Amino acid sequence: MLVDGRWNEYSRTALISVPNVRFRRLRPAAVLPRYMTEGAAGMDLASAADGPITIGPGERIGVPTGWSMELPPGFEAQVRPRSGLSLRHGVTVVNAPGTIDSDYRGEVVVLLVNLGQQPHTIAPGDRVAQMVIAPVSRATVEEAVELSETSRGAGGFGHTG
Image 1 (spheres, rainbow, N blue to C red):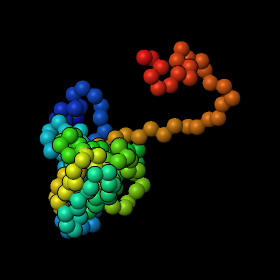
Image 2 (image 1 turned 120 degrees about the vertical axis):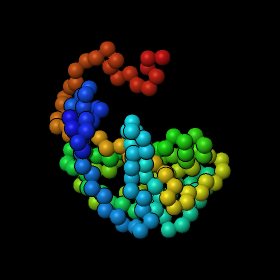
Image 3 (image 1 turned 60 degrees about the vertical axis):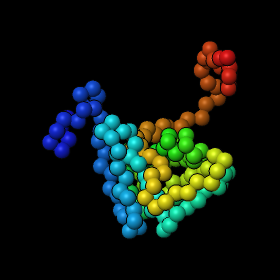
Image 4 (image 1 turned 30 degrees about the vertical axis):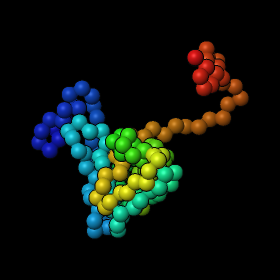
């Protein structure tokens, strides 16, 4: 498949829809989300807060990105932690992955928690999370009196050892 006049490397192995996501700037200091490498699955989201934000151990905060967006129908955005931020500082996304629905038009705010033992400061422009655009399937819902039998049955957490 040709994308911007060149072959999309992923189209050689699978048929993939490339959605167009529109972003609206809400804050002057907002950094447009972008993929940092050719093979990155997620685009980085940066803080657009008015100044530095410090998250103490055990605290949760909402970090504004300064953008609202328009996802095409049939897609969602998943907000996920940045592995380096989690490893080095214990700062991660509270509700990972956070889901942004295609009909949401408010500001994208990243919900972070500090699971580390030291306060961590986020400066404006610091990358705080990544966002993956993914297709969505909507199921039909049906109430049933009985469900089919399986070898697992009702086995829950740790049932396979």
